[in-house]
Length: 237
Ligand code: 6PG
Image (cartoon, rainbow, N blue to C red; front, side, top):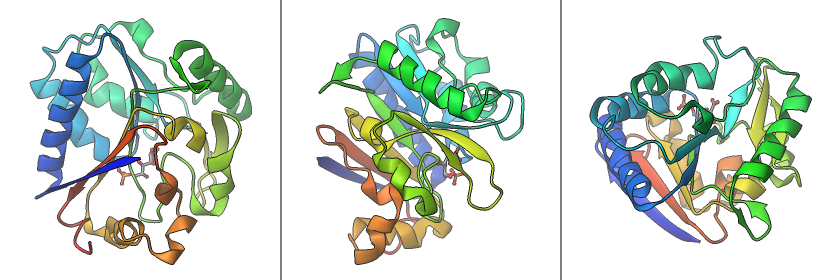
């Protein structure tokens, strides 16, 4: 695994530099398959993409999600809705290139269906679906996508997608799993804010307990892992 650490002043600079990284990937590839992350960090990235990169040719960009909350696509918790609000409603991209996880479907059924979609649509590498880029966030508990420390076994599932439960509110989530993430050509962590500092430090310093956190298991077998961190999240390293 190749790893790159990119430290920036604040969230704005993280967003600015990630957008430049993404633009490069989009312009050098014929077709590009990207798994987007959810939560709140991507909002500033998507706003910047919509503002400064709407001119890009998005026609060969295929968008997926690393995880989705099991709610309707119009629900405030929906990662798809967040992406529509901040990006998809502001760029020209063929609707057939948008492959959302159907949060409104029965979770176990959708995990199977989305896994089959990845199998069918994504290029293969080593017999497994391969994303060109998996964009990830990290929770302050060290979760990534929707694999939480108390369900870390989901990471090593043989399936491409699993159903997870949010540890606090029990909300069902559909999430891609470690095999798919670590088969990607590029994985990019976007982590900002002082509340993430403790886990970022433990993971990047390879502390003994760090392997209890799903985010610590992100190690692309053949690809490159890039961390995009602001000073607040990177303070301890
Ligand atoms: C989700 C995300 C999740 C997120 C982290 C960080 O659906 O919530 O995919 O893995 O990336 O929780 O979220 P923030 O960016 O909001 O801190």
